[in-house]
Amino acid sequence: MVARKILQELGFETLEAADGQEALDVCKQKMPDGVLLDWNMPVMDGLQYLVELRALPGGDTPIVVFCTTENDIEHIQKAIEAGANEYIMKPFDSEIIQVKFSQVGLL
Amino acid sequence: MKPEDFDLIRKILRERSGLVLGEEKAYLLESRLVPVARKHGLAGLDEIVQKVRTAPAENLLVDITEAMTTNESFFFRDVKPFDLFRDNILKDLIESRAAKKSFRIWCAAASSGQESYSLAILLKEAAAKLAGWRTEIVGTDISKEILARATEGKYSQFEVQRGLAIQLLVKYFTKEGEQWRISQDLRDMVSFREFNLLNDFTPLGKFDVVFCRNVLIYFDQETKKKVLERIALMLPPDGVVFLGGAETVLGITDKFEPVPGQRGIYKLTGK
Ligand SMILES: C[S@@+](CC[C@H](N)C(=O)[O-])C[C@H]1O[C@@H](n2cnc3c(N)ncnc32)[C@H](O)[C@@H]1O
Image 1 (cartoon, protein in one colour):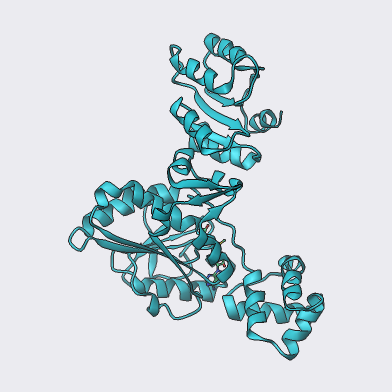
Image 2 (cartoon, rainbow over the protein chains, first blue to last red):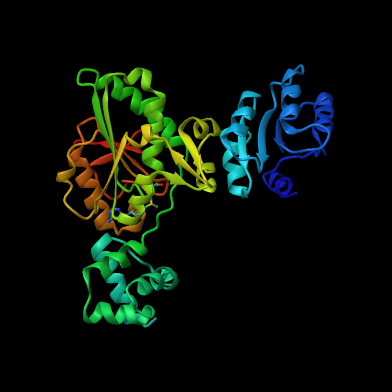
């Protein structure tokens, strides 16, 4: 995945999850500092994951950045309401990830 | 390109916009000027040079000059200057201008408008404190073409993702096809007009704050000095100028000095 490579180049230690449920399980064990989140995933989609994450104890701490091809205002608004900190619309480049991550304080 | 041809183009650029085109930038001529040649019914670079040497039409020279400008810009470019504007400069203005309730900001190299609109967003976000105020943001640039883009206020998905927080995007933009357009409200807060920094500044009037960012880098020492000293004349004693990250007043003019602890902001020395 492109994003993973970019994040590693920026010095992050990364973990990958195949879908929202898997991501939730990972977070339950140990909350990450940041989550880069796709919208469309099998089993549990990104939005549902975010709602459930924010309801977990300590689930308000990770900084969540959506990264998706869903790039209309409605999707973005839903994500913000669910507690997303930033939103990256695909296609993106490493500079956009970098700028957005520093805006939310991950860099 | 022959050295004498390069020198000819270089001379035109320097006289018309102040741009100092280094040898290392010669490669830019090809990509930037071939489209200009086409537009004027000329075959290529050599024909442009030929035309310029023998019968230069004003609109050809204008197009050459505009084509060689670098228009790169971002919303909230470098972040920090805009934080400083919001947290310090704007706060000071609201206090010091409380009686007349008005101030003016000039973006002296406005390019495609991101800087001016970033400031408009900051004023809008401070609207509660600015109720009943008359604020003006004037964006100027030498390039008519880039100003047309600024006025339209339409940006690509890439452009709105460089520097603009997502909350601000949904609040102040609407999607038009693949583009994002800044709201009419914000467009009304900014006026754009053509202006060459080599010209007399007096028609522009007075400003309280000047953003002159990422344009002096293209000029020679002499031109930088002239521009800065003319800006000094249009500011009130407590006025400030914002320069780009690679620009300074140090070693160029003693009319300004850095504001301690506020990188990129310069105040008048009174000299
Ligand atoms: C790199 S952009 C800077 C945009 C913006 N201030 C920023 O910092 O993002 C430089 C702009 O300066 C303009 N410019 C160059 N020479 C100029 C001149 N002599 N008078 C007015 N504008 C000029 C160019 O057209 C270009 O749009």
